[in-house]
Image (cartoon, rainbow, N blue to C red; front, side):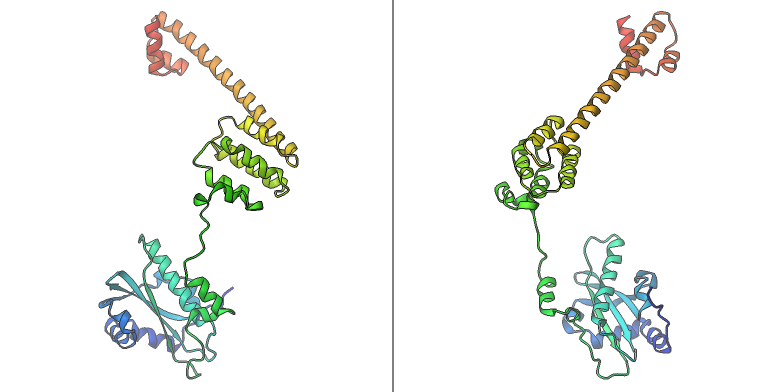
Amino acid sequence: MSKKFTPTPHDTIFKQFLSEKETAKEFFEIWLPDEIKSVCNLETIRAESSSFIDEEMKNYQSDILYSVNTKRGKGYLYLLIEHQSTPDKLIAWRLMRYSMAAMQKHLEAGHKKLPLVYPILFYAGEKSPHPHSTYWLDCFNDSELAEKIYTKPFKLVDVTTLDDGEIMKHRRIALLELVQKHIRQRDMSELLHEIAKLLSYDYYTEKQAVTMMNYLIQEGNAKNPIEFVTDIAKNSVKHKEALMTIAQALRQEGRKEGIQEGMEKGKLEEKTAIAYQLIKNGVNSEIIKLSTGLTDAELNKLEKKR
């Protein structure tokens, strides 16, 4: 459990001064870099309510979040005060984390794009100068690798653009990639050969094979699921028994549905026969509907047959 933050006189005086718009405006006029200041309209600066700021982050430090209009839309200036006797080595990460929390709140308010959030650390601690880096990537053990990861586009694995032949070379991940690529676009029976071939290798556990078959039955577009699973089972020695069990279960389910459909059909025929006799005897149509549950359209068809 996080230790609850207890405000001090330092925090109180900080917030009293910087909560005033004109004071905050002059602070940012002095301390914002020119390239940031040039895109901000500081006349529009406004301190956001504490409810806008992440609940957990309020437990650590004293801070103020300001909204400001910029040339590129609404943005934020995030001001954090640190006056601890032992400065936080991960303060740069805290600044980044709190900035991201402000971005998330911005999205939750209905905005479609991330806002720019410019964080500033106001330091008034015992040690001078401030002893730690304010570059958040320095918080990693390997800052050089972190910079390569977090300052470039993230890796994308887009299976929709891969050639099936290339996917088939991907060994244990090939089955997942192949099925995910085509699950929405085509009858999975067209991939029977490829799926059976992959399952014939010693790549997949029985659980993986069964899970995949269930997924294909539920989400795939195979015209004949029983035949599809049976054909794959015949070509997969390792998983044949488990897959044949699935095919058998499908057959049993199909029989149950057929019996149920037959019963429903029989009930409908019985209701129709009763309704027809009532119509011939001149019974009111509303009474017939209540007695049989037939619709107006169904009764109209019977009326025409009379």
